[in-house]
Amino acid sequence: MDGGQILTQAKLTGRCLCGAVQYEIDGDAERFYYCHCSRCRKLTGSGFASNLLVSPVDCLRWTKGEDKLKHFKVPEAERFYNLFCSECGSPMPRVVEALNGVLIPAGSLNEEPPIAPSARIFWESRAEWTCPDESLPVFAEYPTV
Ligand SMILES: [Zn+2]
Ligand SMILES: [Zn+2]
Image 1 (cartoon, rainbow, N blue to C red):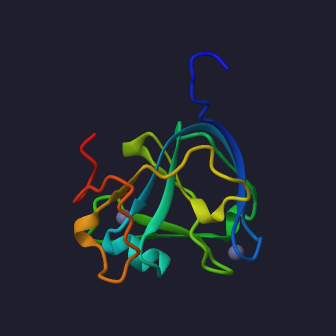
Image 2: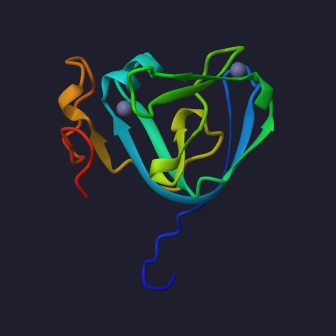
C-alpha cells in the first residue's frame, strides 16, 4: 500500500431480476449516494434509491438483452428517466450526461461496489417511514460538495 490511495477503478457486472438484461461496467466509481427524492421513491418502490455513479459515460456495456430495455422519461423533469427490463421491471444503469457518468442501481450489481455510501441526498423529500441513519451527512436536495 502506498500512501493510502483509494482504488476506485471498478470492473463490475450486474443483471435484472429475471436475468434477461445483463451488463458490464469498467470505469471509475465516483460516489455512492442514497437518494430520498420522491421520483426515486416511485422508481424503486422503496424509501430511497441506492445509486453508484461510475464514470465516464461510455463505461457501460450491455452483455445481454439490450433490446429488452424500456425507457421512461418523467415528462415534467429536466432529465430524470428510468431504464428498466421490460420482462421484470428492474431498474437498470442509466447514462446521465450531466454527471458525466452512469448511475447504477446498486442492488442490480452482482458484486460488492468498490466504495461505500457516503451521503443521503434529497433528505428534505424523505418519507417519514424511511430508515434514519445519523452516521451519514445529509443534504436537503443536491449535495453541496
Ligand atoms: Zn428482467
Ligand atoms: Zn432521487
